[in-house]
Image 1 (cartoon, rainbow, N blue to C red):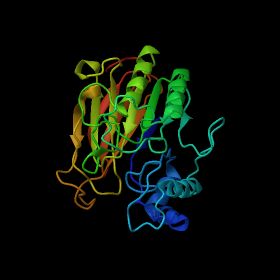
Image 2 (image 1 turned 30 degrees about the vertical axis):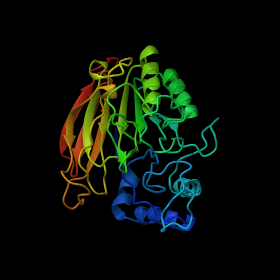
Image 3 (image 1 turned 90 degrees about the vertical axis):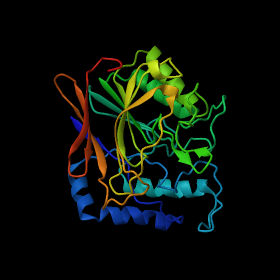
Image 4 (image 1 turned 60 degrees about the horizontal axis):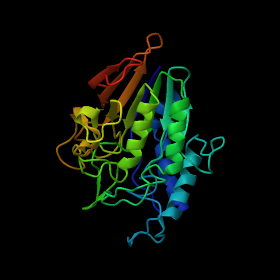
Length: 319
């Protein structure tokens, strides 16, 4: 069993409903994309560029390029275009209308938990409040994820997260776009939900979790452990980042020490928005051995060169 992941769709589409379909049309008539889709099944999730850069629910735009200023209206149009061009049901059994988060099951070896860190988040802000209940997942999605992880009997439980956990991703001069908010101390803001989730995984003795994530435009591997962390009530785990396949590359983001990440590997350009013609594009590959259950993650560069690999054993914690 093998799988690959990447982050990169076209740049943010125009605001009208018709124009939001155009990037998908342009992408799907590309011969390389057509060959890929003919051979490889795809699990897709959305993030910001399906609507506009760094959007969040309730945002009102101060941008003369947009006649529609209400981002919730734009997000509804983008959701419709997204669902029209990807064979993904956004109406899972028992779920709320239009939801993106879901579990994709691959038999006894693998469950993939596809998150939506965009639709339920609070506003991007300095993010250092100590009583943030909305967070980046919303209460309903967090409860769903805890429940489904507890129910899973798969050897490996891959959490497909559209944003990294311990990488500081800024939004402008003072606000933050991802989970980490640059304070290495106890969890604050959006980190509170992640701390609750990690605590749940530990106390329920849920094994075989790892995070595959993206958003930032480079590739890296982070190992998280309570020995290095300000928050210590969790079991060690790995986070692997890879992408993009068709966008500019950016330097590596700073780490936030709240959950104790160590950057074991990174490959990133030294300056911002380096053209794909200058800098390699990246993707990740995961193989699971059907006999032993051993899982191997490989971070690859354009052309297939293996930059980094890590072998994980089933049932072991903190490897």
